[in-house]
Image (cartoon, rainbow, N blue to C red; front, top):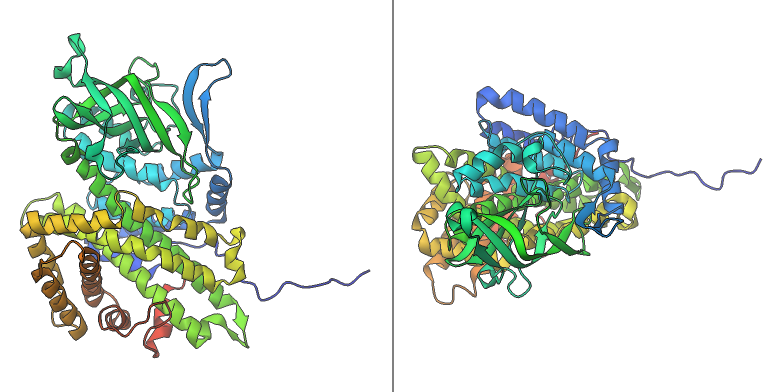
Length: 557
């Protein structure tokens, strides 16, 4: 019998069948910190259950299959009827079903709802990021719809349902749950939505403008999740740019005119369908909010999805760090495990810092959303804080995702460069949240607008930083430097990125000084705020604290 040519050794086992939530110390501590004490145990148990599902080999296989078999457009049925449907692999539907059942479209029905929903979104997004797009838009549509109480009464129970009911065979009112999409950008305008040319004509007769019914004519260059039951879109009404609700199936069961021209062939996010759509003058829509107030109406949806951009990027970074530290703990080189090699330990610790700072900030913002819905001084503080902190966090956290994903892939070497490792999918996904809901320049300019138009937001931001005042001299110096930058308005638009970066770092630093272990806060302040840091990961000041940082970040299956 011939001898075996080789035996496979020194390979890391798959990171599978572990609890994604409980293995993440920063997440566990953050949820416990922000959730009301009487609900802490229930929240922990729910998230641990979802974490176990997210870490299962079965869920990981669903994510792989949903990306290897991307959605396909069917414009017509076999008889030539226009149907404009999108077919998905069964694994996509399993991911959606579990996400909806976990309440990822419903932060509204319970106390601490946004915090618990954001933590769950963070956990479940680590399985597969593409299906997070419709989950995000569905929950975010509710604040906009509340501008029209009649529409909110009709749609909010469906969008907040914990039952995933897919298909365009029935009107939404006959379904157990609904999914929402969004269409704002057009090819001539992009982020400049006021350049939109889609027209909305009030319908005459019994369904006239007074009833809020319109017919749309135009296009959308990026329409997310076109298989959804309903969409919020922007169009030019007689009174100016206005927000509209466009159902895919009309109340009588017929299809609304919603022509899907093609699906986008994207860098990443391949499991999710992004499309170009046309409205032909017979597309029926309901007005949401007043004519001419489209941006003001839909901005609350945008703000909620921007928070998910922060949370989704934090989740991707966490999964990248989890994979890198897991690999390093099981791979040996030069007689020692990689995780024990001083230079690799520095790289892992540096990425762990970036990940924890992102997670801590995302959870603080989620808790602020819950608080902002209430009354009193704390609620007012958090409402003002969010106006400035959300675009600041969106700018910085989403930008840090790309280099971290690339560095984590490199930690696996050639193993990380092959598709089976899952790391290429993380890397391809990493730029998305920086683009979605406004790229970096859009966020930086939004911060400037908030500073100019909402002085209370800067007061709230400084108050938030003030909770950590005196705890670290490097943080105090960085805050002083930020104030110096704010005081110099000459050419501030060209310096906006530098300013917003500094604002994000001092906010993260203040949160870590208050809440993280001392070695974590010290390393962050020394590197990100004190200048003892290089231009690449793995350039932290050395010391025994690096091992503690890595062990805190490493998941144990």
